[in-house]
Image (tube, rainbow, N blue to C red; front, top):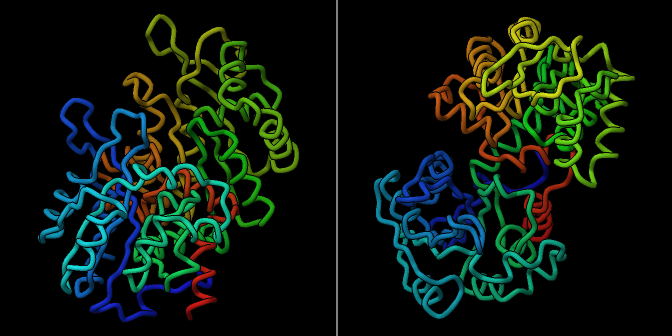
Length: 411
């Protein structure tokens, strides 16, 4: 565990506590109703621990300009229902209305301030230093009437903004229960996983997935890497098999300026660690709206590759079943198309059946696990997509670094 303070290190009863959470959730575009409330449920242990404090919740929903950029009123309402208590929504962030509401709170009360991304400082300072963040108006005003800061927003811990990493220099700051659990579990998957350790890397974020693969291989903590989805297609290509112009151009366009660096990592993995790779042996392509099988031997193809095939799954299954720890990040297919969901769902079924400790790396994979009611059958279902990728690739996270600074200053 990194050297930061947790709620076990503090008695915050009777204190005014700013709590940054990530409850950014998918919403029905027509009704505005929540399509997934898992992030709200994820912060409940922290809020229960702070039941005798004056809790001021800070959060965001989407970002300015997007259709689901809303106030936090419905979040406050739903979270109150889940907790079984009243959470008062305050339509202000750090102005007179918010400050007055905070100053009038009693022990045990909770209020939810408005969408912090409605305050320009929150979205315009991603390259700022911690000192610059601490000097912002939002941090200065809120810290002036608070006793402590708790960060339980793992899903945006990789981002740098005033409410995420700006309080470490001005308030005693602690990791919430969710953040602590995520850091410990995902940290063990990087530092000291149970062996054999199998890592399934899929989805469309090839650069992030290759960063993870290289990090784990250089640490010599992984036994088998299974690239699937677009990541698998890239690795098949890097292994010397052309995919066809359509599929190769898709990967180039998705990676943009990151293509050259990602290609070099893919070739390095194929050249130096082929013994730890299980590459797809067959695929599924779309021809006139229908699923069609294709052996890797028959590449290239003029049709889009949307899934792995049965032979590939027969190689993947035993590896997952024989593991003691499995990390899965990213779908194996274009699973939103029902005819191409097969590979992803079969991997999920295998992850449910194995005796291994299974870690789901957030994002689309986590949503799929929740939608299919499999979350309780998984060892750890991460609430963070980009944050999970950042941690697993060995990169520093601003939220964590700010908590470390606070630990040094206020311990």
